Length: 125
Image (cartoon, rainbow, N blue to C red; front, side):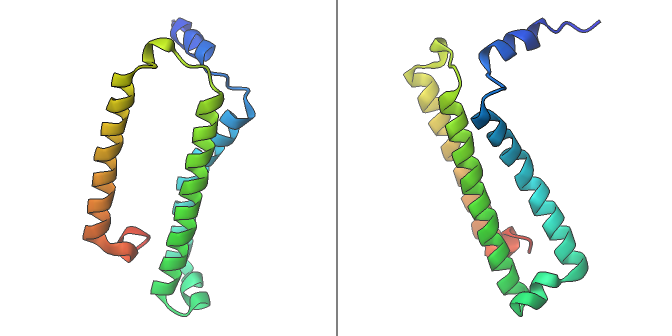
């Protein structure tokens, strides 16, 4: 037997019928699917490399599209979070600054890997 009480309580805090929430979930799921499908398609066919005249130009264009999709995903997520109910116990300074610290560490990891790999190594290199 599965105890669904925990999931029932969780769905009490999240409005899964909110349009912003649904759009955010779809954008979060779409991005890695898009990256992987396009990357595998390019690897097998080299269509973008031929269209743009070089593999580097195709990689820069695809990297720009991926960055744009990341911005759209982040915007959708932020808007969804604004419309969701929040727990008052988590609405305090220490949770905010903990989130900022985690964000800073994640950004440091992303920037250091980007600097180590370069743009083409990061985006389908």
